[in-house]
Image (cartoon, rainbow, N blue to C red; front, side, top):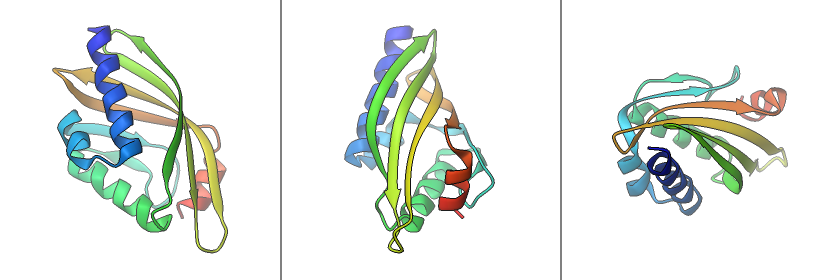
Amino acid sequence: MENQAKTIVTEFLTAVQTGNNGQLAALLSPHIRWEQPGDNLVSGIKNSSAEVFGMVGKMFELSGNSLRLTNIKSVTVNGNEVACLLQWQASKADGTTLDVENIDVYTVNNGEIVSAKVFTSDIAAENAFWS
């Protein structure tokens, strides 16, 4: 179980880095529960892969398509849960930048990511950038 969970999440993160939307859709459960931190235009609970893709679309819109997963610092496993330390960067045309570490915790069941909970190292920066 642990190896499958780690493989699924690693494939997901690679697809995020390469922009492989088909692979992303295949790895996310249609009924995923995604918890995005903060009080901004992209935060809150998403209850489907369609809502997650809508959130990501909004992030690309707000960042002028600059949002990047720049570093996968660690991928750790406990059963079917996978915690990842990730580095994200983005910038806006006005020069505003975001450079933040997140810890994402994914739950994998039946070969799909069924839940994700995102923790940020700098909620104030996220709220300012995504507002």
